[in-house]
Length: 202
Image 1 (cartoon, rainbow, N blue to C red):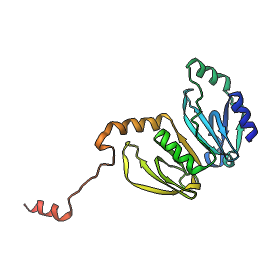
Image 2 (image 1 turned 60 degrees about the vertical axis):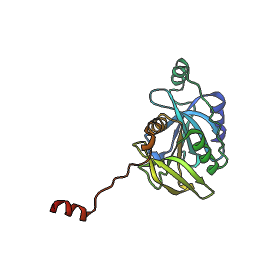
Image 3 (image 1 turned 45 degrees about the horizontal axis):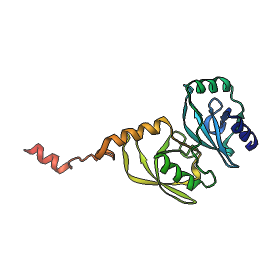
Image 4 (image 1 turned 90 degrees about the vertical axis):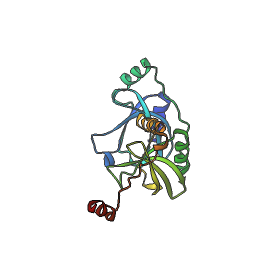
């Protein structure tokens, strides 16, 4: 597979990748191969509106099928050419997963991490605080674009998919930057029961 991925990269063709066990038979990823090694492939994604929309890293062991070129390769490449959108190498190193996550977080501000074998219906988005050979610490950002008040530790090799540099991550950063002092979770202070009773007795 690595040889075919390299051919796709050299020819600048869109590939279609399936991960049937994780995504089911009817879901796939379309993108340009930016880099690959014996463990991972880095794609620049082509979304449904035929625009380049961030990057995705997949693990070769999870790939069940690989189509090169993708079914609509010529159309997609032509539209991207007309829109003057070109593939850009984010220049991240795939050789060390912990270093990779740290570099992505520092360069792009946010990284989206999927752990589909552990949490198939959710993902975490945030910035890497620390990563080693076994675990990583993540400061997460919520769907309201506010940072969580605490950080969370996860197992490094539970990760099954990595995404960064896309329009959603950009939207979260834009909204968060605009919040100023409210960029972190808003604390909700509720009066205790004794205070409520006292108020009612008045």
